Image (tube, rainbow, N blue to C red; front, side, top):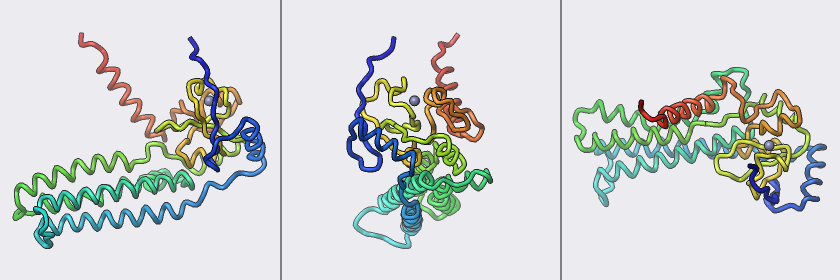
Length: 275
Ligand SMILES: [Zn+2]
C-alpha cells in the first residue's frame, strides 16, 4: 500500500532558508545556467591538519605522563593518562570529519586507486599514528606500572576502533564521479536532512521521498558537499541517466557496499532460527 504523500517543504542549500515552489523552480532554472560555488576545501584541510597535530601532541603528553616524565599533580597519574588519550581521540575525530568534508567539496581523482584510498582515508592513517606508538611503547616497557599498562592499552585499543570507524570515509566520492554527475544532471537536485543520508534526487515527487517533509534543494556539487554522493536509482531510471553512481550501485570500488552486504548477511544469518 502506498504511504500517504507529504507536501514538501524545500530549503535552499545555498541560503538555508525555505523556498516557495516558484523560488525552487527559479533556482532550478538558474542552476542550469551556472553552478553555485560550494566553498573552498582548503580551510577544512588546514583545520584537519591542525587538529591532527594537536592529537599527536596529546598522545605525546599521554606517553610522558605514563612514564613519569611529567606530572600534573592535581589528579592521579592514571587519570592524567586517560584524560590525554580522550583529548587525543577528540582531536583526531574532529580532524577526520573536516578532512572528509574537504574531500566532498573537492574530491580526489580515482585514477590511482591506492592514492585515492589513502587520500580519502588519511583519518584512518592518523588514527594509527595517534594511538599505536602509545600502545607499542607501553607494551614494550618492562618498568611501566602494571595497572597503567593494562588500562592504557585497553583504552587506546578501544579508541583505535572508535577513531578508526569515525575517521574512515564510508561514502567516498571521486572527481570523476562528481564530473559525471554534474555532466548528466543539469538542474538542481533534492535531498533529505536525514542523518547518514547519501542520496540525492532529481524529482520532487520521487517515490522515495513520499514520507519526507523537508527537502534541501541545491546543485549536484552542493549535494556531494553535503555527503549526498549518489543519485537515487528511481530518479536515475526516470531520467534515463546512466554513468552516475546511484544508490544501488554495486561497483567494486564501493567499499561501503561490501561492508553493508557483509553486515546484512550476518544479520540475515542471525535472524534465521537455529535448525
Ligand atoms: Zn529519487
